[in-house]
Image (spheres, helix red, strand yellow):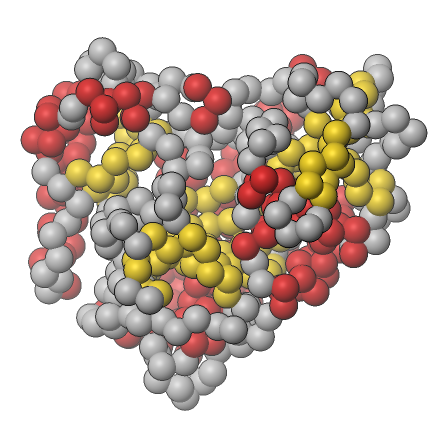
Amino acid sequence: MVPHLITALTGPINELEQRIIDSMPAIERWFRLEWMEHTPPFYCSVDIRNAGFKLAPVDTNLYPGGWNNLTSEMLPLAVQAAMAAIEKICPEARNLLLIPENHTRNLFYLSNVAQLQRIFHMAGLNVRIGSINPDIKTDTTIDLPSGDSVLLEPVIRTQRRLGLKNFDPCTILLNNDLSAGVPGILEDLNEQFLLPPLHAGWHVRRKTHHFTTYEEVSKRFGKMLGIDPWLINPMFSQCGQVNFNEGTGFECVREEVDALLTRIRRKYKEYGILEKPFVVIKADNGTYGMGIMTVRDAKEVDQLNRRTRNKMSVIKDGQAVNEVIIQEGVITHERLNDAVAEPVVYMMDRYVVGGFYRVHAERGVDENLNAPGSSFVPLAFEQSAHTPQPGVKPGLSTPNRFYMYGVIGRLAMLAASLELEAHDPQAEQYD
């Protein structure tokens, strides 16, 4: 079932929506040419916010969890995309080793691992789950709420290869974002394909790198469509050398918040938008909705209480936050049963394969929804991500809205592709 959307469609987004739908042949050709030049990330998910007057990505994850949130109708699309992705990398692949995160008590996360295993099994691969958690010393079966179970096996490292007992994979798929760095067991695998590459992990990646690249992509896309790229691009700035525990580096944050709010107000005035602007301060690396706060006035930076500073000081795996991205806040006008919602789009290879709404009944339109208490409502993209309905008024056609999300998701995926190319250590060796 496709959930009903209640969206306040006002201002330029109507025109933008119509422009994108009318330009579908040009857009698809544009993407086709881009993918001839660049390799898409193996898989990714993109958080999108729809303000009614603006539609933009706010985060891009290259090790997406949450595959269990997608509707069963998306399975054939995901399987086809998995086939295409594997075929390009290792056409003769028979065995795939899936390496998950180390937190084995999170049954919701392990349900995501089980779904990934199912997708690649249906794509024609023998899939086993290898744990790099030092606590997993023997084969460990964990039962899931759905009635499924996952078998975690301790990985075995030989001189050049990584595998399991009696299992030698040609391809290793990471579903572990490497926030705490690269375990030595994953390094120097010269005879196996590791997907995504190690430099896609959060120990290297920065959100500011991604959104710098996305800004360039949105400019080129905007020029092709004849639109202001701001309508699909969140402005941002950065501060390094911040210490939330000691309260140092806040001057930079305050100045950048003030400057960004001024730029947003200017844009709001240009488009006659009456909303109160805000910014989101996030750790420049990391995921899981940690290290995030909403600010509406630069003075708030100096008034952070101890609890907020503690919350901002560390992210996943206890990593300290020293660099932050200050991002233009994009409100969400999406609702499901009166609760605030935001779409999350999932892609594999260069294909949109599905998505869901992240819903949070206790959060406002200008707050982070990736927080305890959120729930997930799947979206069926099987017919709609690539097939808008020409002639149907924007906003009344659910497929038109899904097509929009798919376009924005693919723009963010293209930016991730360029970002990975720019920071590829092997490419630097050959320069």
